Image (tube, rainbow, N blue to C red):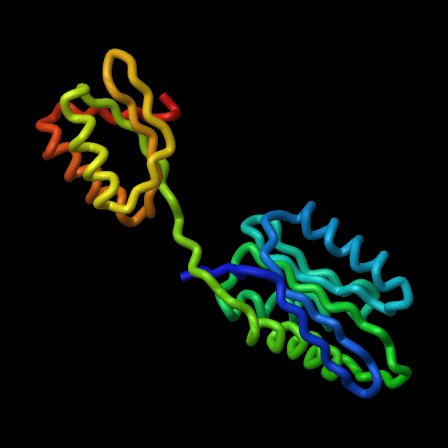
Amino acid sequence: MPQTLLAPVHHELLIKKSRFIACVQPMTDRASAQAVVAGLRAQHPQAAHVCWALLAGGQSAAVDDGEPSGTAGRPMLDVLRHQDLEGVLATVVRYFGGVKLGAGGLVRAYTDSVAQALLHADKVAIIRQATLRCSAPYAQEGMIRRELEAAGATLLEVGHGDAVVFAFSLAEAEAPALIARLNEAGHGRVGWIRDDA
């Protein structure tokens, strides 16, 4: 099951006099990630490289920022994928210490920087939510409210017109069972409203 992070976590490694300052943090999209990276460049003007990797749906990225191709961004991205993370940005700011690490050494350094930061991160499962809408006669409002509460659904909106209209969300996996319960308890008088209709 994919996970994301609750909060940013920082970790620093020293390898042959080079400083690798890593951060892993929740991130929703590429534009936000680029803003964070720009902020790091401003914060660390003397740094040799600000490499980063993003896993955010179709907006993934792996950026080497001047390191030899495939030695920084891709290994960082691989760590995020290996841990089944989603909506996460990994950044590593490198201050060059004067000793070249070679391609293998760079891959290890960037991989370890991100992996070490993730060891201290609080992860939370991503539970896909379904948003549903239904209408029912006023006489069934109480029953529907009780069923929604029992199912752990979040009531988003209630409208009172010719009928009572409910908008609510709950875990996608729980939706079919709740729909079946409401249909049965409502004796066929619960109507489902599709947003694309």
